Image (cartoon, rainbow, N blue to C red):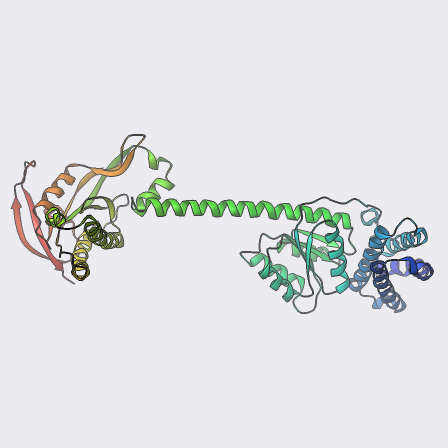
Length: 481
């Protein structure tokens, strides 16, 4: 015989006498009770009948978990009735008090912590509580008690039903029974804590088993608290209040995090229209990202514009010019970004892009040449649409040059831009001036930087205005692949 069952056997006579006394008192006074109290007494006596049947069996056959469930039901309904009875029901109130005292003596591990005399109510922000228990009376008791103090309570009779409830609602706290048929409480706890949307939901495990290993297992699995049946209602209220506060803090933090993400996406999307994604990232993620100044970079510079654009524009309405220009710039932008180029700016119909800043890659020159070839190839489709809309056919010239530039924030504290400064920029501009429509010219420095194979045409040595040394340029005809 276990120690706890021995204690139950010793105190069972007192407990059974208290039940008999309560039945007699109820029989004499029930006509004066409201319907809700009559139903509560019926539930209490159902628990009493189950308890009497259990105590009538051999002590060794008593299942402690079932016993704790019965104790919880009797105690819960007795406490509810004590609160609901009016001042005229003195006899019933006294009988209920004696029953609770006898029940407390019969409970294993009873003591002051299980005292039912505490009538405090823990004020809490109203919460959405999910009570999971396979026994109907336990679910009803929890729902009744917590609803009285302002909480909204939903119940689930199984682990599977609990998971469905979590999918349908934003639950603040889960009250979880461990021993249930089918999916037990441990499996429900595991699934809650593994689910990305539920893992922050506080779970209070409620069990009739006072098993230290089981408690440790549940806490390690993520349970926020552990209560034994039959539990003190005030203590449960305090635990729920703490759980709701934790959930509210988490929800506020999550909302704040989502707001930050939305703001960052907005910033990236907005400024990404004016700066490349890499520049936006550099500004946002580095503390020094907005500081004026720059550093020396080896880059491949691309300049491209539409040949004879000024003359073409004279014969078109402004809206037609904008349509034609946006179509061209949109297509070219997609191609440049696909080749990881940094678009520095649009100047009318001209495009200035750089490969190698803010992030350097070993194949910067190769990507720049491949990008230029794809840009020229895309002109056929652009012109097909232009012709269909009555717009002129356009041709572009593209120049590439590799050299050292200062890359960084240029301007003042009040207004600045990420840009590039250096002699290599001027050289590229001069090469672009000499490029024919549909052609690609690269400087000798770019050609020497290539790692891949490309089809190279004529070589020219040019003397251009404003630059003392001669410039050697090469025509790019295509990829050798």
